[in-house]
Image (cartoon, rainbow, N blue to C red; front, side, top):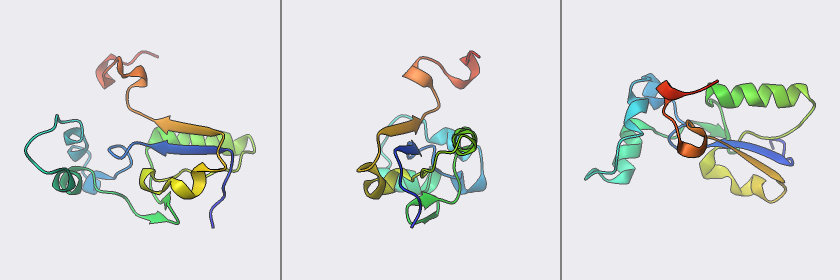
Length: 113
């Protein structure tokens, strides 16, 4: 069983995908709702990635960088798939959610450092 800890890292469903190994399909995940059913839209543009006990075998680069730094500091915690949070959430004190836009106030091209 993977570690359970006070910290859990996670990303929203649209970011926790490998986009069928085509980075351009990831842009479709931000498209507005339309007539395509959600289950089909997800399967086409941001399918769930493989997990082991709810832990993703792949994760967004930014999330992995945070994970590496926390591990370097001695924290033992899972990076969980958003569809498999329930086994880990009960013991957590911190749930860190990776998003593309902090506070939803900027786009990728307008990011400030």
